[in-house]
Length: 101
Image (cartoon, rainbow, N blue to C red; front, side, top):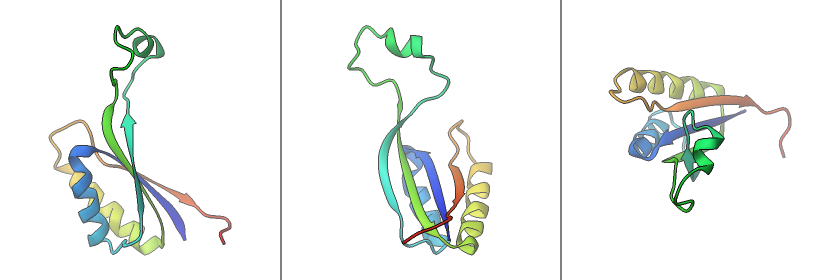
């Protein structure tokens, strides 16, 4: 079993959920996050309106799942990202699990 972590801009959230289903990943968790790209700390602190959001609305999903399902998911994501016209691809990483209860 491994930990699959996926980040995506909100625009593609439904696509990630569809890809999970196609890869037979039925158990996962998700959270709303803000994504940042190359934002220096100076730029983030120099806002005239500090309450103004500087990041992109994004989502993070994670699932404890088997290698075969992760392989399938990665293939689907690779194909999805190949056809994107934006600079915001789906990002996915796998973390091995040494122990679990």
